[in-house]
Image (cartoon, rainbow, N blue to C red; front, top):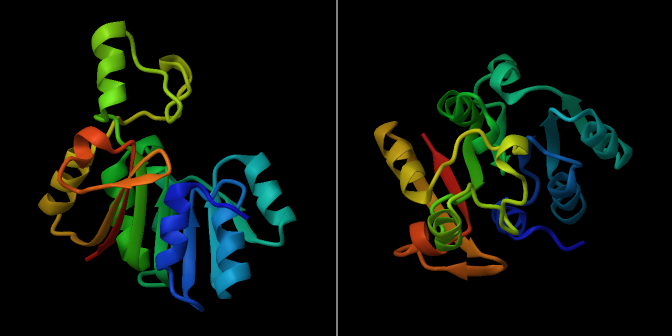
Length: 195
């Protein structure tokens, strides 16, 4: 199974046999790959009932829940890795969700679309409307993205919160791009974090 590029990066860096919580796990695509290829003990939390049903149908341990409310119920350091892929920008309080993620997991992976990527900037500049791109296909009024985060915004937030960045990967489509121009060039970012 070919994973979405940000999920492939995460899967490559989760060690075999780890305990993982995937927050906003969707239909369980990453969890299934980790279970099947690395014998990872993967659990999931997902808001959408159809995605929960699809993940459970794959034989995965997924519960329906909301990251903004339900992460507070998980015990400290109960997982080796807590993952938040393409979910941070949909949270009402991404700062609180991130704090819980790094409390629950010894390390945390966070991936998100970069709203400062050059295509998004040009679309807004020349079109005068909120961009609709391949990476951000929804109209402004129908998007789950309620916080438009950029690579530089995220770097500033983790630095201000004293969070260590153990790894960072930047994607333009399926290609990796360098760190130096990531805020302008990357469509997606993946960070490995720890407290």
